[in-house]
Image (cartoon, rainbow, N blue to C red; front, top):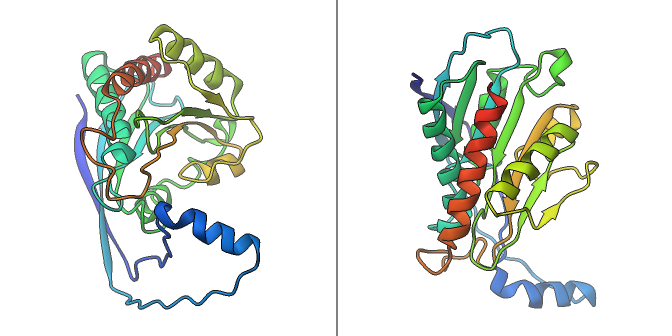
Length: 247
């Protein structure tokens, strides 16, 4: 069985960011294209920020094999039903699969807080595990990242990985589930989110991420924002993939 744990940490300041609503994107981009003058008025306040990661750890008999990390963000702006919901379902379904079929290697599930504040939860997770972002040959881990918008209504699913074996295995499992990725990104593509630093370090990772017409909008809510059938198929394929990687 796994050990349910929580890592708590404090960041002195929440990472500042400016978000522009998708509803205003066309106006903003059109103005930028014609070099129109603009004035931005912002009021900001720095406050101490505390976030919390939720961890589940499995110890397998092959303890000297490279560990597997299964991660997803668990916080965001607004309700973010489609943005975060699909990834959390994949995370939970994979966890349930490993409880039923315990892994041979060490596995850590982490649902990270602070995604919307500069990834401070993931940063803390990685600081506690130096070197896990490196290639397997140098002591690194294998990382499975369930990203944003998996199963969002009207969205597309993208597979990102620089590892041929992970790309091939993922396509096989998703084909069996009847939910092939809409996009398979080039191996040279640098991810923009959680696996960016792992990619740059030459580590072994897989990211599943979708698009969402309601991304970062308060309208991203249940039930209209989610395609439950897609979420079901993706979660089944994700769980089968995680089980195979732990044998």
